[in-house]
Length: 143
Image 1: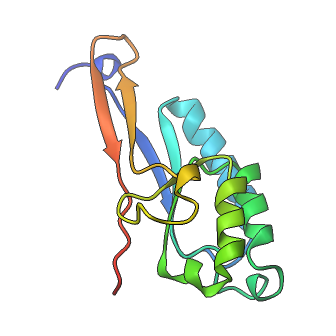
Image 2: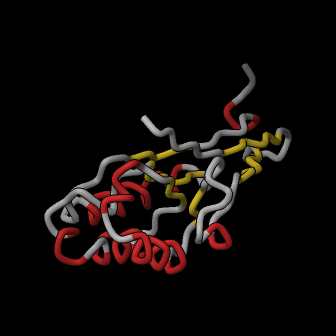
Image 3: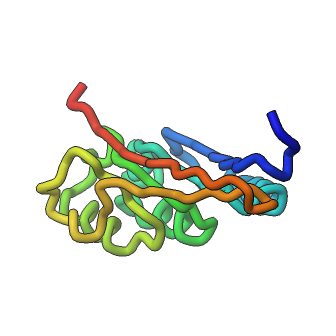
């Protein structure tokens, strides 16, 4: 292993199954700290965030989407609970999301034009001597 200056490092902050909004300010601070340590830091929410939480039963995920855009969360993926709110509302949320909504296996989804089947991130070492590419995909099963 070479010196740290020659390592291409990607930091991933991943959360899932988010049912409350009050922790987003803490998450935002964590992401700022991690991005300060490593500019190649991404945030990812891997499903189950539009439902089922108490507020979503009233606002159909509006508050959650506002938080995801404000933090911001770089990537989201589908979870099985995103189907718990009306499909038309979900499609509106997909279109309003400012990050990248990854969807690798539901290519005929009504809002696919606002989603990406994959993402490739290029990561460079601080001294520029190494470059790596990292592929991101998102697959939702029916189980």
